[in-house]
Image (cartoon, rainbow, N blue to C red; front, side, top):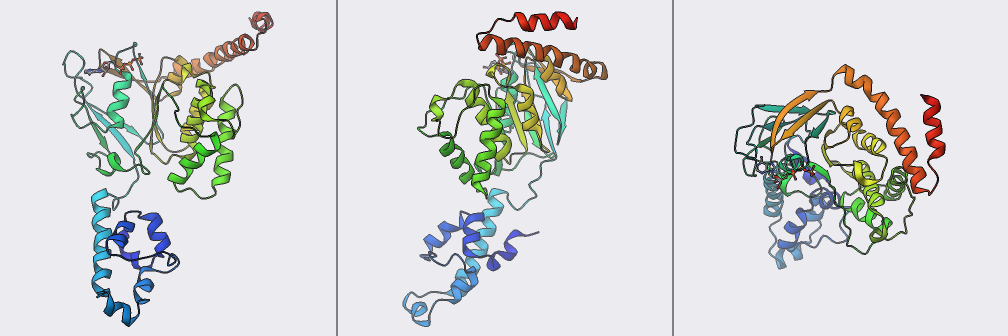
Length: 345
Ligand SMILES: Nc1ncnc2c1ncn2[C@@H]1O[C@H](COP(=O)(O)OP(=O)(O)OP(=O)(O)O)[C@@H](O)[C@H]1O
C-alpha cells in the first residue's frame, strides 16, 4: 500500500516523528509548524487567514501537492515504500585469500536460524561478518555478494541509522563518551523512538546485570565499566532495543559474561543470527556452521543429531568450568568444586 495516501490525515506531530525528513520541507517552505503538532497538515493549511495568504503569496493547493510529492519521493528514495520484512539472507560465493573461487555456490539463511562461523585465527571469520554488515556487492576484498530476500538490498539499509539491517556486536567495546549507564541507554532509546522509556531502561539494566558477573548500576559512568560489563550492556541493549532483523556476533566467549544466556537473549525474536566462535557449545547451538579456511567458505555443515545430543554433555562441562572460574575470581580454593567433580565420576 502507498504509505503517502494518508499523510494529509496524519497529525503534524506524527508526521514529524515518522518522517523526520518532512521537517526540511516545512523549513524550506517557511512553514512554522510550532504549536500546530496536534493539527493535520490539511487543517494547518486551512488555518491561514485570507490576509496571510495574500501577504505571503501562499499557494495552498500547490504546497499541499508539493508536500505529498516530496514525501512520496523521499520514501521511494529511501526504499521505505517496500515491505521491510527480512525473510532471508543469501551469501553468493567470492574468492579466498589466494584468489580462488569459493565453491559453495550460494548459502541462504532464513529467519530464526542461527549460524556459527568457525575456522582458525586469522582465517576470515570477521571478514565474512563485515561483508554481511556492508551488504557486499563484489566491492569487498572477498568479492562476495549479499542478497536480502533474494535481491540486491535497498540503499536504505546502508544509509538509515534508526532502521538498520544489521546489529553488530564486536570484540572491541571502547566507550569514550562521558555518560552514565542510564544516559547511554536513554540516548539509544530516544534515537529508536521507543515509548515507555523508563521501563525499557529498567529492562536493559536488569538483563545486563543478569549476564555480567559483577553488578553495576544506572549511575555508573560507562567509562568505568569493565570489559565484561560493557559487553553485557551492549548485548542487553541490542537484544531489547534493536529492531534489526540480522544480528552479527563476533566472539562472545572471552568477555567474561554468561555466553549462553547472552545468545538466548539475542535470539529471542525471529532474527537471523550469525556468530563467529571458537566455542564448541556455542557452535552446537547453531543450526549450521560455516567453516572458513584461507579467507574462503570451505564448507557448510549441518549440526547433526549426534552433535546435538553432545550439547547437554558439553553444557555440564561448561557449568563445571564456570564454577571453577567463579571460585578463581572470588579468591577461593578450587578444591571444593574439584571434589564435587570427583563425586560425579
Ligand atoms: N577472501 C579474502 N580475501 C582477501 N583478504 C581476506 C579474505 N578473507 C579474509 N581476509 C583478510 O584476512 C585478515 C584476517 O581475517 P579476519 O580478521 O576476518 O580473521 P578471523 O577469522 O576473524 O580471525 P580471529 O579468529 O583471530 O578473529 C583480514 O585482514 C581480512 O580482511
